[in-house]
Amino acid sequence: MIDLRSDTVTQPTAAMRAAMAAAAVGDDVYGEDPTVNALQQRLAAELGFEAGLFVSSGTQGNLCALLAHCQRGDEYLVGMDAHTYKFEAGGAAVLGSIQPQPIVQDDDGSLPLDALERARKIDDMHFARTRLLALENTWHGRVLPQDYVVAASRWARAHGLGMHLDGARLFNAAVASGCSARELAAPFDTVSVCLSKGLGAPAGSVLLGSRVLIDAARRWRKMLGGGMRQAGVLAAAGLHALDHHRARLVQDHARAAQLAAGLADIDGIRVTAHHTNMVFIEVARERLQTLAAHLHAHGVRASIGYLPTVRLVTHLDIDDAAIAHTLAAFRAFA
Ligand SMILES: *Cc1c(COP(=O)(O)O)cnc(C)c1O
Image 1: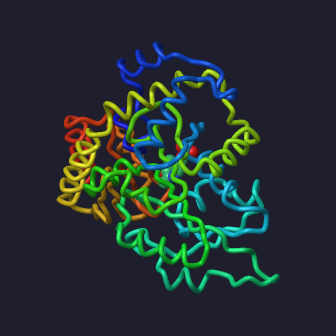
Image 2: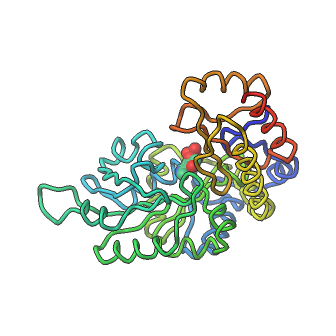
Image 3: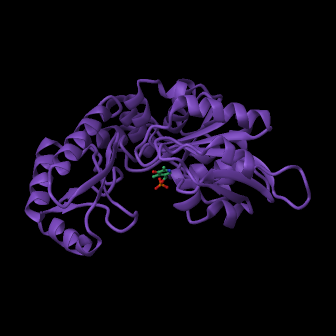
């Protein structure tokens, strides 16, 4: 199967498995796993933060961050189509009693400053306390314009709000924009990055922030059941991914561009967007189920039904032959 549903579907490489098998480990709840500690310290140093926290998933990292920033009855400003609002089962509201204030995003993923200003509550007992602005980079593959991020953080700081970045695919944003991940992370108090997306590790994310925020997040992680023990076997996969799978993200982006260009030439398929490692297409609604069955029969999987458009994502396990095969399958469908 050529699985283009997501960049989460990658298999750990033989070299990654070897690194995992060789990892030195200890009990991370006691803070004694040397490989987890190395991963946390490495990313904190590289992205310019005091501390890092290895978590089981991006969802757990975002939730720990929201819980560390906000108290019960606080509010975070967040994109209407943001992962932290829409794709995390409502965790901040359910588990933190934190009210989301969703904001309709512009096409580039930004939350317009005038909309943020209208949504921000004044200090009054009728209102939740607006506490945090949460952004996402990349968002549906789009690199958030950094001048927007800087302007948004200036606005947030002026009103005493914290800043969290869901940087699940921050390294895709870095290689696509030519800005360092550190530069992209600089305007934020906390940043979560995924190791299990384009980087190709089997599990894990790291949350970065100040010592105070990370200590708070660690307590929440424990409460959420995320205190893992000899987690160094997973952290080793993350360290291996940082060493070996970061620069190659440009190949995923090039293959996505190739896929988008090929699909654009096929009758009945409209490429609606193509950014970093993601391609979004539309086909006539009544043909969607046929498309899914057709692709399946040709050994291709795409994400159909979760979003208004069909999503195709390139990753470590998609090579040039897979792109050619996928385009042939789509041509046969047309
Ligand atoms: C995948 C993803 C996450 C975290 O997802 P998990 O499946 O919990 O690791 C968070 N934000 C964005 C934008 C993502 O794409």
